[in-house]
Image (cartoon, rainbow, N blue to C red):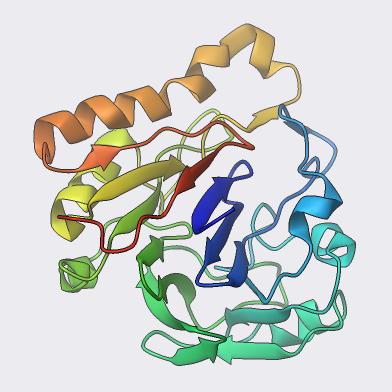
Length: 255
């Protein structure tokens, strides 16, 4: 199959790179009773041989315990400091807690935790030290932003990223703090200057009944991101992927 990334919906992305498989923020079904997934779930066979699972933060649409329990094998679990106890109950893999700047070697890949400007609390009794993004570095470098707003040190990623996975929307009637809309995500693309930007965190989850009433609210962010990047960062190639769709990760992507 070669090196590729596959968008599985919302913030769930499968990165196949240098013979290592890393999955981000697995959400493989409906989220609670009122938030419905509108795309088919990836078959379990597509998630075999995972080396690691990266969890960006503790919010329920990113740290979903039933999804972790459903994963095959014993992948390593990489989480912000403070969430290790929770994920250890859901999966048998080794747990690594990380802070921004920490690095972990997974096969031929180096995973580096990056700051994310987002809420850290999961419940009244559970929080983490930080929300995180991650740089997945091998023959190609992929930046998974998790959930984040713009933050000052984002400029330090410039020149380090081939493919940026950037959140551009949400699943509710409005975006709360710690999120980017298409325009702010385009500004992130300008600051980071990746070769390719892929919008995530849009068009997958809908509050019950709202897809029919307000589908445009959830389906516009991807195309709007492309338009905003064309205006703000015309050197960045935007690839819009439907859930289940893949793109090749070419070695030595030319900037």
